[in-house]
Length: 244
Ligand code: PGA
Image (cartoon, rainbow, N blue to C red; front, side, top):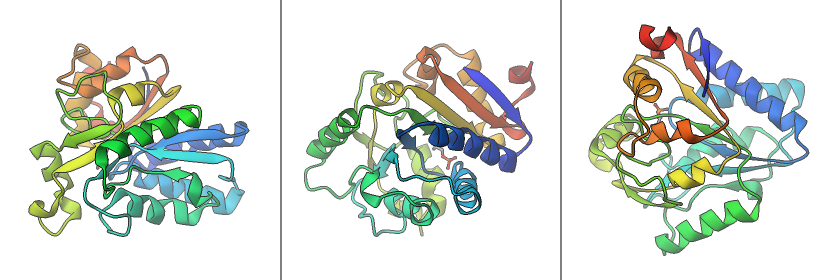
């Protein structure tokens, strides 16, 4: 894992966007795995600014998002489909039919999981997967204890995750209790991974990631088994012992 240390959230966002733009510009076509949450919002803003200013085109880009809440349609402002449209897709020249997010309100959720996994395969796999990390070490919505062998599946969200995400909902009760997420094995199949980490709230997770064993109780630890991981983390997220 390669660690790039940056000053703050703005610099993390800028560097992450540069990283992605370089890949998009140099590839004839590329499959991007994308994440939601607070962390990548600034990155998406930088991608949009660059698209407007430098005309980076997303016509040959296909995207697969990590996860979606069960029960929410894409029209629900708390759905990740809505988030992606608002933060990125509506502001760049990507073909909407090239953007994939698990359908949280699918009639048959098990079938949706299989379909999603197959769609990724059919498109030739993910070239670059962008990830955030939960303070409990989750990646996507793979909560602690998830087997490393899982593909796209339905999960029960951990109480700490529902609490962390309650800030987007009117109340904590409204946070869905289940989600569809790419599995750890899906994530590990990506050719390259870019993990973004910002803020003091993530310090403990970053220490565990660098100092702990590879262990299903801390899902992000599996990234140590991947050959091509870049981590961009800001000063607030990097404690002294990781820095040295
Ligand atoms: P955050 O979430 O970016 O909102 O901190 C990250 C995650 O839970 O994976």
